[in-house]
Length: 209
Ligand code: SF4
Image 1 (tube, protein in one colour):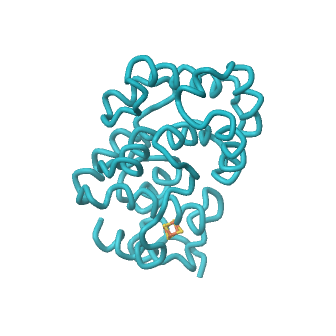
Image 2 (cartoon, rainbow, N blue to C red; image 1 turned 120 degrees about the horizontal axis):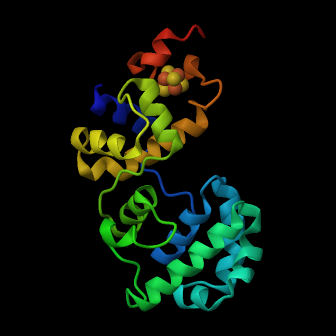
């Protein structure tokens, strides 16, 4: 795979991308990322507007009853588990990390509900610490392109980390996610209008003109 060409073609279409999850602090992004599991970003943004009005930071979230958090985040789905994790993560940030969202992968993944993907989102978008989040779009695109041949996010992250300069990791993930949403859909990818087609193993075989 010509990774530079891949990045450049996507960059020409989408440019420097911003994280679509609305937030004003690392804690708010952490909460939004947690709620975004199996939920669209626009819905998360609607929900966090109300949630952050009641609990804008870790101490306020830690003080909110789990039942109230669940009520507020219900439209995001999986709300019982997400409320429990959000409450526990807020308490841990207050009690273990001195009310500061940690800045290392090792510490972030100690927080309930935070895995490598979410940690990379927080590191890259809040602290400018390079990270390559692998979500479902990233996974699908890189496999269709033939750039990777595995579904394991940790292995995919390692392949990209070795092939792409660190300063591009965060935006590269955004670019792939934006393209996955706009063109390379899970069902019926629009290969005929895709800027990556000549680089793409799936696209070259696709009969769509
Ligand atoms: S050519 Fe088709 S499969 Fe390949 S990235 Fe583009 S839309 Fe996806």
